[in-house]
Image 1 (cartoon, one colour):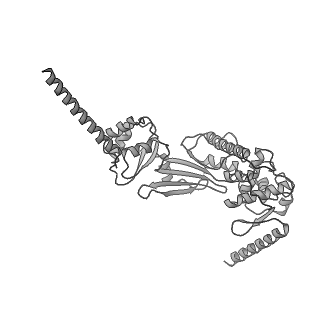
Image 2 (cartoon, rainbow, N blue to C red):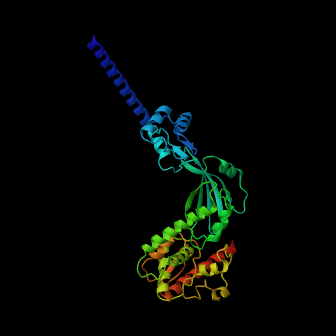
Image 3 (cartoon, rainbow, N blue to C red):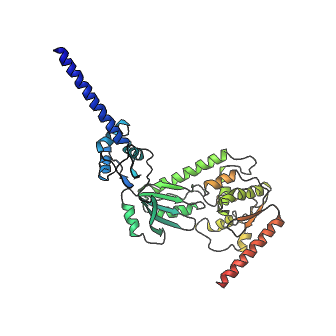
Length: 388
């Protein structure tokens, strides 16, 4: 009898083991196979969300077929508490495993609405973009000037909506005064700015920010990145540079930044100024003179006068035989790198060439010919303008 009972118990155990194993295989297949989504969706994951809440939302949106299997899979992978807040693009037919990776890995939002505040050299703008989940391309739904235009309704709605992301882009060549004035106008930030940072100390870059962030904390973030960039550039500088310290790297980089917007020219422009400094020549660059007049507070709005080019000021590089005492703008990373690693040329002159770039020269005669060509281009343009 006992042998019969033992035999039945063993049979039941094998049966249950078989059933359990089959369930595991079935669940694993459900977890890793293609999901039911027939088109991509944007999943909003609020801060503080639980795996239970996210799985329920995924079921309601038709992204997964079984919330329990999703939660078991998350627990098995040790990611139950690894959820990141944000907006995540869930592709069509994404498996439960794929979705879990999307919402627990980087935490970088990949869809939804993005408000971009752009701090430029001459103007500041705001753009509201929304991802079209079908085309997976962002579409502009609103744009306005930060200082002079009213906030449209689309901006207000997006600003107050959960899941909206915010970015602040600081353009190369801005001044610290310009950055501070723009930050005062960005209404998702809080706090009074304690002081205007030193010129050149803020890193132009795109930054992800959150609503309610303190303005001083944001400025500190820009300053820390610029310091990091200059420190790295200083340690990697080439030999023979006429630069004594990191501040002079920023000064030269800011001049390069203001002299050309053509990426391929930065190394050449840097070589001109380095060659001039090494030869004891004056830099003779208009942007420094302009900065001495405006103090970086807006655009000059006119051409330089002869009297201004002759005036003996600390920023007039047509008069002083050295660099100005401070940077004249916030240089970007490429200009900083060009300042410490200029191209190896014998150029000591350059002038506009009519294409947006410059013509470079090693001798004064060659430079004078380039200037003559530029004067002809200016005259032709003036003549065309008068005839239109």
